[in-house]
Amino acid sequence: MLAATLLLGLRNRPAHSLLICTFNRGTQGLSRHAARTCAVSARAPLSTSCTRRQSEASKIESKTLDVLGTAYATDDWTNTPPAILAKTGRNLLHQPSHPLAILKELIFKEFPTFAHYDSLSPVVSTHQNFDSLGFAQDHPGRSKTDTYYVNQNTLLRTHTSAHQLQLLAAISQGEHNVLMQAKNNFAAPRNERFLVAADVYRRDEIDASHYPVFHQMEGVCTFSREEVRDKIRQATTAERDSRTGDACHSDQVAQMVDATVVGEDNPMQSAHSAEEVAFLVKNMKQAMNDMVVQILTKAVAAQQSSGEVSASGSQTQFPVRWIDAYFPFTSPSWEMEVLFQGEWLEICGCGVMKQEILNQAGMPDRIGWAFGFGLERLAMLLFGVHDIRLFWSSDSRFVGQFSPGRINSFRPFSRHPSCAKDVSFWLPAESTFHENDIMDLVRETAGDLVEGVKLIDSFTHPKTGKGSRCYRINYCSMDRNVTNEEINVVQELVRKRMVEQLGVTLR
Ligand code: FA5
Ligand code: MG
Image (cartoon, rainbow, N blue to C red):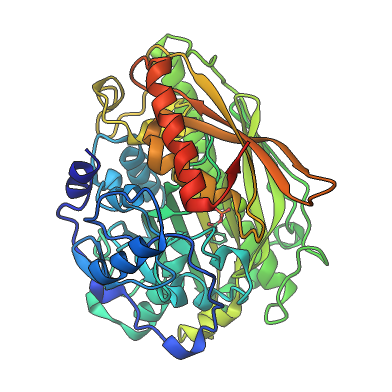
């Protein structure tokens, strides 16, 4: 069944090889981790163990990994499992009735003067994803525990910011083969503002709002310094005085609170004047607030017109807050959170673009801001979807509820009972164990039957110094009842693979 999913998964998505930068092998200086995962071939069956003989064999048999029809050489960094590879061909953003595609179009419409990209390949270089954005060499995001690598120099993008420098450079140099990929033909005249909607991949925790493959909407908006100078000169004194922390906005649907300030903890860059930063921040927060208010207003209207209270209870008011954040490629930086069903849901990151990126792109006379929204998180708000796994469902009771251009409240179908299983183990002596190894292993074994994985106990043995962990795995199908016997079989396989692949000792 897995092989079938894989073949389906790899169907007809063009490899946009034009967009893949050439790699600079010598300069990345990434430290090599001991390989704990077997080299994976997209066409190879899911391996259940990683014994020496098997990994030797797989080195011979699977020297390449197929991603979207292109074969990539594998190495010690290759850690992308078949279930993740299968997702690279799903193209949810290109299915007009899919809620993520409906949301994408809605945001594209909100930014009519921006170029719109939604077909950039998820295979990027480490340079694009990290180096070009100023990630430190020891940034944890680069590690194999956090990122799906195709090989040492190539990975599945972890965020849409991976395309910032590439697109800015293409704009600055008038590279038509890249610019023509904008959906709304903004190639000419050249346009220094763009949106990128795309699938992104991360080894991450498992719960109702995190999934290892999700979608982001990047927004990049640049201005010439001259244009900004004129705008500042024309602004009234009152407008000039309002700096950051002024993004409070209250209407019936969204109550926005912004108590942030630009200062020591969230500094402006020395390349910018205080007036330039104030202009950029105001412009950015205004654009983002307008978009979020639009989405929340549509969400409430949809709820009210459905005339039905969703299972999780309808929510007609959304507290929204701005908080300080850090990204290597923006300063100052923020995140925005929305209170959704009693929990703060982080919907985006943003900030003033690092000037080095614009300089490197050949635009030293421009300044700009950028944001990255999590599309699933926004779609959860917009359509009232409570579980992020549902976006990958092909159950007609889910997909049948949506149609192109229509915003409606999702009517949950009956929730099936869940079943919790615990697994306790000792960590291996020389432990390079990372929680995301468990997340991946459970996801690979149980697929979307797994609803959540949570650490419930952790201690170190006082005499042996050995570390112990206990994880609770919550199984729940989105579309059917599962029997305890069926879950027991899956849980046994999870336990077996934990021993074989992670070297743990079960307790
Ligand atoms: C980023 O990815 C930055 N590239 C965003 C950015 C762009 C900052 C431009 C500045 C300028 P972050 O890791 O916080 O940041 O992710 C952005 C959003 O993606 C989050 O706010 C969240 O809404 C969503 N997100 C992150 N991880 C997951 C996940 N595992 N599942 C679903 N959505 C996620
Ligand atoms: Mg974040």
